[in-house]
Image (tube, rainbow, N blue to C red; front, side):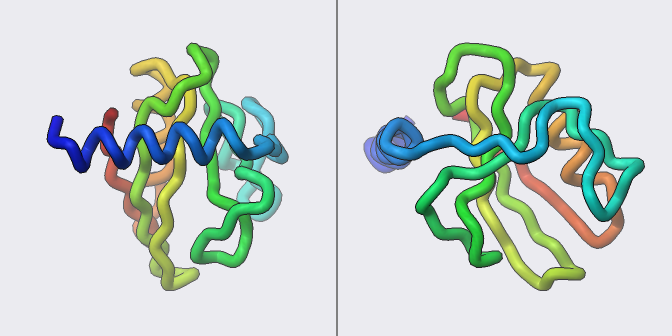
Length: 115
């Protein structure tokens, strides 16, 4: 890991620690627009942060220790945007399920970057 990699992850840790996590789509719930999409982990955002879609920075929260595990870089052709999503405390099984969920349509693609 380079010094820049370490700085990225440490800065992301600080952002998460200084933010309130809002879970608005709990594990097992269905997406409001796409009922066949069931969330494999808690999904929400960091309150008082900014993302490309005008909302807070998206976050997936797993059942492991509450530390930044990875990030997802996503491309959405329908919304015509790119975003970063923080993965917090996710196990390998949760990472695989989240990645599969984020890549489930032909209009979306996601790349997982592990810590």
